Amino acid sequence: MPAFLEHLGPAYAAGVPFSLYSVCSAHPLVLRGAIQQALADRSPLLVEATSNQVNQFGGYTGMRPAAFRDFVIALAKEERFDPENLILGGDHLGPNPWQNLGAEEAMKHAEAMVAEYSRAGFVKIHLDASMPCAGEPMLSDEVIAERAARLCRAAEEAASGAPRYYVIGTEVPIPGGATESLSELKVTTYPMASQTVRVHQEVFARVGLEHVWRRVIAMVVQPGVEFNHDSVVDYVSAKTESLRAVLRQNPSLVFEAHSSDYQRPSAYRELVQDGFAILKVGPALTFALREALFALEKIEQEICSEDTLSHLSDVLEQVMLASPANWSKHYHGTLQQQRILRRYSYSDRIRYYWQEPVVQAAVRTLMHNLDNKTIPETLLSAMLPAQYLALRAGLLPSEPQAIILHKIRETLLPYAASGICRLADARWTQN
Image (cartoon, rainbow, N blue to C red):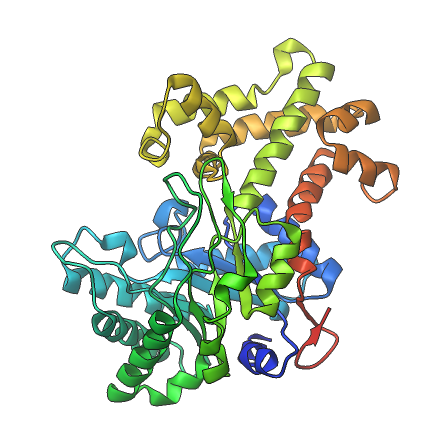
């Protein structure tokens, strides 16, 4: 199944574009919801881990690449989703986690990480060497391409002959959303994107990787989409018109759009029609997870005894205040404004805390309390109206986990409607 990645560029060049959305999360409920959506769509599923999330030292999930692979495959099997239709990717693979180190030391860590991803069977690899390391000025395109080639070689040598597919690109948005106020973003220009392709291709050829270039399938550019804590910059198709010339000149390539969360539903189809065939989604999915859990907590407060309540939102608040490293540099303002951001921000820094033992215990209590109650339809209507409508239509049982998964899948529906690959054809079919 991963070989169909080679068809993304030619399909766009032929005027019949199709797409993949890339689920960037390690939360088991998010992944389970994505797997269920892929089953419903009869589509492959692309799941990606980031360099900060999963690496040879464990990342913030505590998982190395092989462990993350096994974790996702186990979930797929539980949902009766064929692992052959699962595509694993590595996002922002490069020196990003070690920018505080000197360039050579950071690159050695990055090469070891990329090799471990490749060895574990991750087939889609974003070669992201765009960030300066300790003491470095802004990097030139040549240096970025040379470092990307080093990472590519490490992946190829670890792959034992199995094909790996690569994404390049130096205009990489901040993982997880912007940290400043947004009104408009500058779209990557045609000259900048064209130069990125040219320099990478020249460097790959110079270092003996010309045979790999046909498996460079995509480039990250800024299409003018982003979100921050409380606002979203919407996609405007006309602003990428000149940029698309890069794809016409390089028919094996498509664009990859990062930070595509929270866009208007129509924007996803426009993005795909404009050559953005890989659409990254992450915080929007854990945002939906949080909305569902907080809504279920409201229901719990209405129908369960006071002495049995989970107090989930309060537990999360206490944990975030006690361990502020994952939000304090991002959320500013008054104490009240910070509190609102911790709970409700689009950037969803709360996602870093779901794995805390006391938070997991509170979630288990919430689920146990509601599993032992009948959730009144009227309360579901008040707290989760879309899930209420699905329940009334006979499409959803009134079980708390099913409600959460439906809420997560609701976020993926606009992506799935944008032109995803179907499994009915040996290569691909558009929806």
